[in-house]
Amino acid sequence: MEVFDEWSQIHQNDLWVYNKLILSRKLGYLCGPAGSPVPYSDFFIVRPVMNFMGMGRFARFEVIKKSTEYLHPGEFWCEIFKGTHLSVDFHRKQCVLVVQGFRNADNSLYKWNKWEKIDEKIEFPHILYDLIGDYEWINCEFIGNKLIEVHFRPNPDFRYGNNVAIPVWDHTTIELEGKYKYVEDEDYLRKGFYID
Image 1 (cartoon, rainbow, N blue to C red):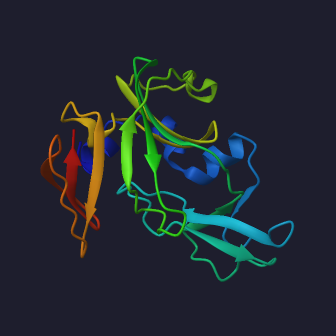
Image 2 (image 1 turned 90 degrees about the vertical axis):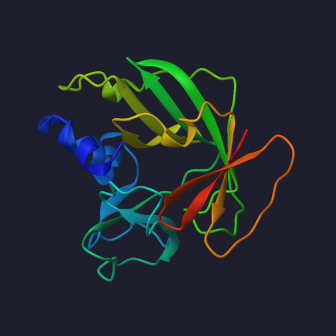
């Protein structure tokens, strides 16, 4: 789904869902907008408050000592969650697809090594039960069972009927033989996928 299509179908009273700062605050996470001080010095994740283009653009881990006035006005800081990263598609609030992401710890946050379907059922997030609009598909991302992102669309990386998606990034070359097929699927710094 194109960004404009996704944006145009959202009921105006549900736009808070795409505001990651508001979503994080409603979920009770330790977070704040650029300019608000952190309660203690530590690593935090810094991300754009809204990012319809996806792909983890400009997200990063950063040590923040107290002041966040140097952050861009469109960014926010949040506590860091540990654990498995899942992308879950709900069709009419029923879990129909769960994929797990794998990324090297030293990679940029956008740069995943692989996404793979797993046999798991995830409960539809309670915070989303009172949405105003009628959304056939809702995609949610979780880290360690903590909801971090919501989209009113299915996971586009698994539209090929695939079980695995291995991204191929700009300025990198990988060749996988056998069961994998390459599909061109450009987005941000990604050229395509090897899928199975």
